[in-house]
Length: 460
Image (cartoon, rainbow, N blue to C red; front, side, top):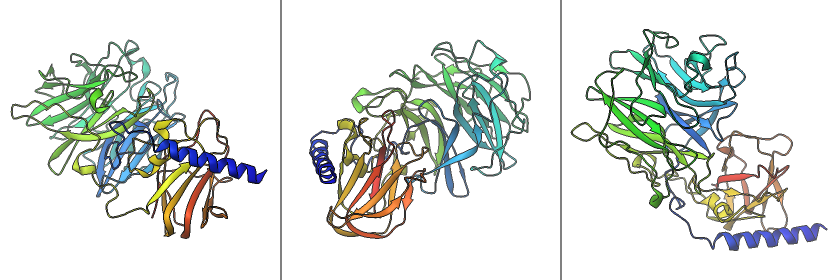
């Protein structure tokens, strides 16, 4: 029986390799693409920089998780996943809370040096404070939200975004609609504690507004940017309006929207963004849908954002390559040349060769009827592997697998075993030196509704 199973699995691996190499890539699937910049499905990004590191906070797809993801990088190319102590759905649930999970963070460093997060949980705005971007975070209001769901039941109390003006004054913008229509944007000056208001709340809703407000100041003008459309189809897009004060009024610009779906580039529903500046260049950090389009799987991308001499924001061209900021992700760290095979894959877009292409828009996913899926690397020759990096598609989930090595593809030795004690994270770094020609990972307890999936597997 063992011989038969091994024989069948070998045939499956060979068939998977032959099939996966026969499919042509589509725009966005080319190797070494800079966008998306994060491996996996995340949305609604916010960003801060502190002591030489950058931190991207993002919603966990599909449609939020029990907690929030935070990605850390020193070079803007290689990002490490962290899961924060707060917010969580449990900690941010009160008498007025609704069922929505943890969504849409905004993080800024206050004039006091502390970090302040405004985040949507249960269709309410909650506030947190920390001494460091990774926390620990705590709610200065105890166990209650800053803006409850019943603040105005006609509108959706989500997508809060804080802005600190040049004089140190802070403002908060938030609001959306229900059923993808009739969004409203509320704004108010924040008190020094960043958890209460210093003045009245105003409705500053500009034309074509649905959600995700972002305030940007440039040359004395205030640019209220926001998203409109429906993120579950291809109509989501970024608009903007201009005002002379942080509380408006705001007039939509003549060339708005400035970031839209581009089917020719295979870019769908870009939006819910933030804007940051690095080395004198503005960038727009946003989510768009994965390839091929799946309504609940969004990915984080970055492109340049520029202003015209007459004070407009230039139309943004969404790219797969990304700006120079994210180019050459691997740098001088050349991985060992290899080919990839698997016991199964879902379809041509999730073939095993994608784990070697240095492109976070592609992935391998096992077929749903493969209860013990295996993915295997074969090196061009017997190689000395010092360490490996695995980037699971769902890095926040526990992974159960055994990794083995072989010199001949017949006799196998254990490199790492996470079948009883699962591991999570991204990247999962394995520092287990081994000499081999083959490496394989066999997942266990694979559920049909959630087959194992890897975005990258590189050996060095």
